[in-house]
Image (cartoon, helix red, strand yellow):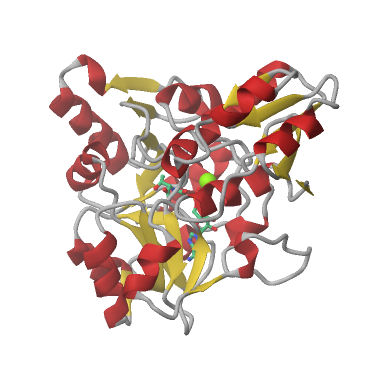
Length: 340
Ligand code: TXA
Ligand code: MG
């Protein structure tokens, strides 16, 4: 299949958005920019189109999709028995990098939620994403637009390298400003739980949901067969092809440790680079978690170019958006950590 490229940076914005919406209305699958990462969208009420998302990504059948909406009213189309806390969260965090899990309404086919009786819903803040949802006149189911297991794409170029030839179109816009996927919480449990950290931080969530708990799968490996609150948590994710380790320790200890590793490479902070004697890639300064989030997936993709034997990643702090970066990196490392 030929993938149509709709480059919205080169002009004719309205027509290109209408074209994307028309393809979606006709049951096609289209990659679209959002503020977090690019998403692979389909009309969430069209089961055939939803099936094609799973096929194009090679996504496991039991991993549910997020439904994207462009106004709060549509919450009532997609979910039922909506608690007051959901409206408080919508008010505080939408539009933005925030997803909540509620009871699924019958308007959303079971296949979107991989058979679960819940549904994940997000209202993105990215203008293009919202324009496309609005013009399509239906909520859009959209996982990240990468091949299953690969780092999520933060620019159109990575969508094309993963999915070119497998999807109907890609809307090529700017690089994503946040860089890691949305914060996911569930309001179906009591107390509510943080399932995936993102740019809406735990500290911010606590201002609206003081009793929210962090699901143990956020930072710990799930044993095979153990029940998970969010199916996406049990898969190996974001992984470079190079064998990757997450390393905790200060800059001096990090340098001493990796400098003894011939044929290896490092993914490190600005503060580390003068100390290193092995090839490295900087993903930001350790003081700015937001920059680390914006760069982390691109860095993981580029890390394979070293063709190194092993990749050692300097771990960020777990506060603020750092928790989201840490959560992605520990998965990229398949939970292999070194504490210095
Ligand atoms: O920022 C984002 O959220 C991006 C952009 C495109 O919006 N989307 C995204 O989708 O990251 P995806 O499919 O890559 O990740 C969705 C995560 C998965 O871990 C999935 O298991 C979980 O959300 N999820 C979706 N529906 C769920 C449900 N009903 N119950 C539990 N977890 C759910
Ligand atoms: Mg994903």
